[in-house]
Image 1 (tube, rainbow, N blue to C red):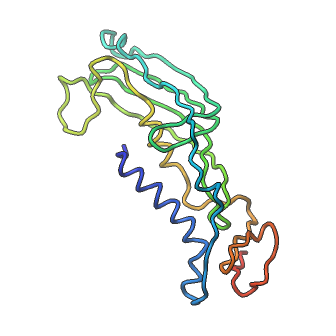
Image 2 (image 1 turned 180 degrees about the vertical axis):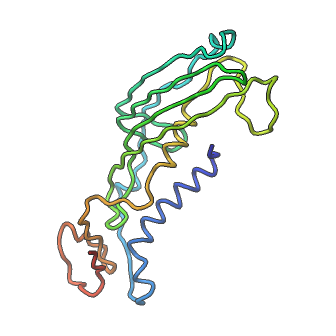
Image 3 (image 1 turned 60 degrees about the horizontal axis):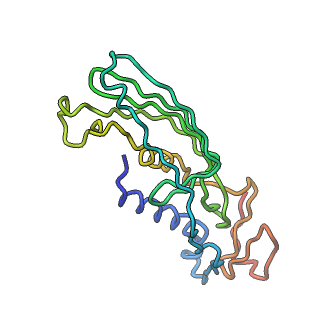
Length: 205
């Protein structure tokens, strides 16, 4: 599972990658390149849609091995701390009591805001993931970094949901298959119109 600091670094690298892909050819050509970011890209939402994803698994602790419970939840929009907005999130997951502890099996589908690799415009990508996590009984724990069954019997799903969805965001994503990118001289979005810097434009097949 990604640590908070590791995931923050991942997000920064992902944003820098999108910017770098659009400007990479300018470095080799020696031509000046700049991009005028719209202030809306720097806007930080004042209100996030938080939902409690703490799930009570205490009733499974004294059940027979193989006992399970299925869950299905949907959210039009949800903010997963510390940094991920997800839209139209659909979650199907199961908790199963086994010999070692409580096994979580989950299938998630949601839309995540990112930026087009070519033109840097905001867009959404669909992320699908399946994962399993074992929460081990304290008395059976043998490794330092194992996930343990919480003492209060509640497992917070926000962290694993966020981490696994982040891993499914593709590195290369386009707002549309024929995206024309931006002008490396003035930052003009070439999908919206041409500019005068013909020699500063990357031609895509």
